[in-house]
Length: 377
Ligand SMILES: O=C(O)CCC(=O)C(=O)O
Ligand SMILES: [Fe+2]
Image (cartoon, rainbow, N blue to C red; front, side, top):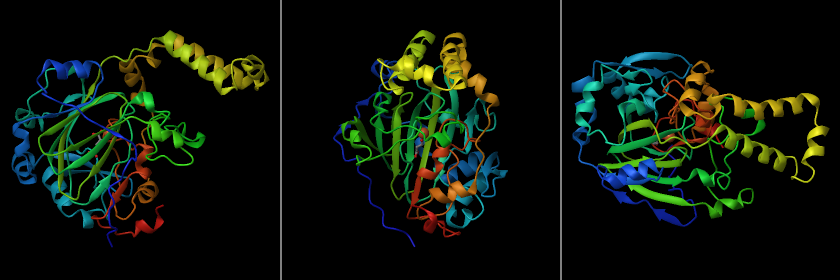
């Protein structure tokens, strides 16, 4: 049974996102300065429908995740059929919001789907070698709350709403502390090795500081493209409509973190975490020798190894990192009232399953073959 959906309310004052012309110098400047905005576009991609995709690229193959953890190749026609029947499909497949139809991957354009790019007017501020991934997304009706997260691989995004309607709240990375963005110790070392990926959404006795967060707001309707700058938290709530969008994840402007700045911040954080500058030295030398050596090694690694502070080199270094595999238990935890699970929603690649999966929610509108709703909190 579908649970009635209540539109979430961050409960803080909202700052309306500015609306710019995507082709303007101002938009390019905003991207260079990591400032968010919304733009109305009139690309031919706005004419895409499931049937149009079936007709143009229906025989091309994409990878889907199954609930048993395996992956399977299906045609786009089959994928779209599964989306059309997501209630039934969710028994076997992970079928809600995650990137499946890959137009461009880390290795470059997917020749099979590149034809779709003819319907897109390429933003002048994205150089081809900045592109990380491009996808077309589709999910069927049903309210859906992706909860707030930021991309762990430092991607900026242009995300065009083609069908449906979404409510978006964005929070700047400077406010991560107000957002309660941190992982518990047990999750610290889980891919994607990023403790600040997921956030809280409301002021609460545990997180009263949320009340001071800067909350940018927009409602995206077909034709609206949003720019999400690097490390900006984005919280999307889908209305109960068929949703289709096109997104480009791209390497945004260089994040100005020099090795020295990173080490400087780290040492300050270490002193503060040890209880303050006054007694930090005593506290440090009271730690087990192994811990002291590890903390020291982190400081030196930040200085000596450019991979830590250079996004491109870092992403190359992380190519061999363990990938998150799909754990149906996590999917079940995540689904509040419906089946399925979302193996992505981050730019980590369609193969990644960020641990935030259990915190997002599919609400009212999808099937729940395993009655997983009862297990969720
Ligand atoms: O469409 C959504 O729900 C948000 C997708 C997302 O997280 C992203 O594009 O990075
Ligand atoms: Fe995202």
